[in-house]
Image (tube, rainbow, N blue to C red; front, side):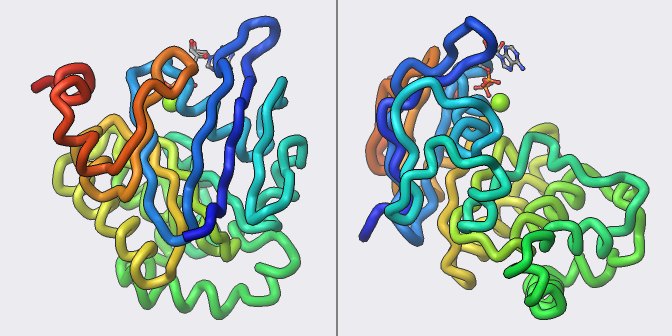
Length: 238
Ligand SMILES: Nc1ncnc2c1ncn2[C@@H]1O[C@H](COP(=O)(O)OP(=O)(O)O)[C@@H](O)[C@H]1O
Ligand SMILES: [Mg+2]
């Protein structure tokens, strides 16, 4: 499979403080890849830098063969790379439907707005049931599902999800993960999944990467990493 996302030697940080010290990873078209690591390892920083929301200090980001290292976020989205930030960040006093429509802001996506909305509501009936409800009135898990569907409204090829299961009940974690798998299988979407539910995230991913203090310290097949005793001891409390 060809690489859709290729990150090489990426450096980024905040002010004078470096956080990422040369991160390299590859996500193949059509796969789910997991990025795991302790709190503060730099996972969110990495997604922000890839998405063009944080200045890159060194290294390169290539998406679908094009160098997007210094491309602004809106350019990355238009190319098909979209990020769902931690917590989802919906507009609480807008309805589910209004939140979804906002995902289709770039011209190519706007032209297919009705089609995209119908597709998301067909795939995830919850969205149709709750379409007129204010986002503020949804449960945490439902909010996360709307945030993911909103990202899909831009018709991306790569979806980067920052801890979609954070703070959710085990039941809702299962539903959110099922949604991600469904999008991968039914829509052929490529996913880079940041998770603290390390075991489950690795189990559903073809490849996994472990980030520690701004460096990738392990990588490999998702299932192999999940079964790795050191990974289990460090990140799965086993
Ligand atoms: N906006 C910010 N300003 C300054 N430092 C930050 C900011 N966001 C994160 N950091 C720091 O960068 C490091 C990596 O954070 P983050 O990427 O959020 O880690 P993770 O997502 O893996 O928990 C941490 O030391 C954190 O304190
Ligand atoms: Mg984070």
